Image (cartoon, rainbow, N blue to C red; front, side, top):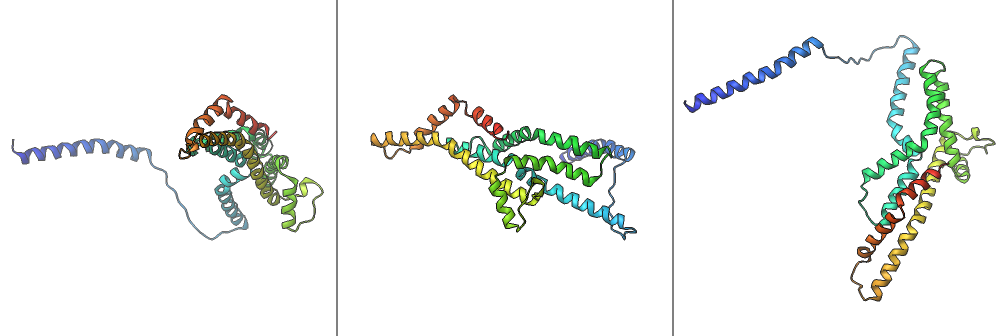
Length: 256
């Protein structure tokens, strides 16, 4: 058989196979039908339509800010900083990797915040979905458990700082403190607490580094990096004392 004839037969076979693959999908798409999305901008006929449009816009804005609120308004800030400081104290700059640190911090955050999220679901979300309470009341009932959690962890000195910066009168009760004042006060309180815990975690590892450095200097091995010798000892000590268990227990109990 001539070469050009072989090429024609080959291309013809490929065309038949391609038609056999595409044709069923084409007929399936015609029989099932694909959904369409129609977005249009027109003139509103009533104030209620404008109000609903603004509500949708505000909802989309809140959803876009949800990750930041999740990070700043919960236990995540303290947990992820402490876990990162533990990794730095041990001396393994890339182990555990950032994905593991962040994932563990999220899991512990959901564990710590479970009572708060349960209260929000019971008091706000489910009654709102059942049309028992209006939207505004549901939002208020959802914010109250978060405020209660933040008040338990925040330093009153930090709250006083932001009240003074906002030039607000001194609050008499907790409900007098606005949420926009409580949230930044809670964040800096969590940062301070996380670094305090990190300092305590660093101390035993610092002792190991000092001892190893002193031994190397006394032996005249000044050109050998102390980290090369101290790293295995720090890892062994961390494993023997079950460090992850102790740190996790301390973090969770610190929120109760």
